[in-house]
Image (tube, rainbow, N blue to C red; front, side, top):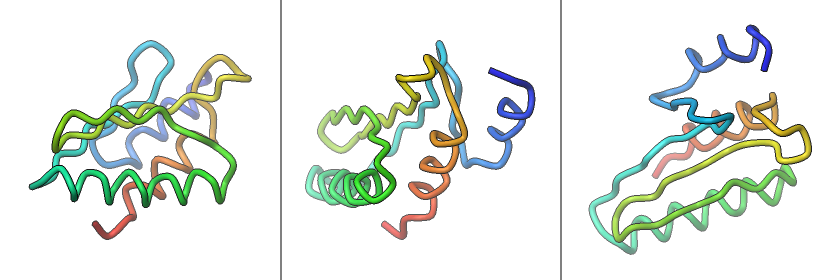
Length: 89
């Protein structure tokens, strides 16, 4: 991953990089609010044809972004992360 991509992490809200994966944990008041969030992320992902790994643990959703074809984080991941941050949920 190049340095320009590494700097883009500063444009995001509390995302981290772990082993070539852009990661953020979202916590909600209830399980159903977490499910609603996952459904909204799914719509975004389909619209841009870039699909994150989503792991739900009751009211917590782990979002993991990487571009599998490239073998690491790309602009696609940062763009989708920004869209997820911009969801009004």
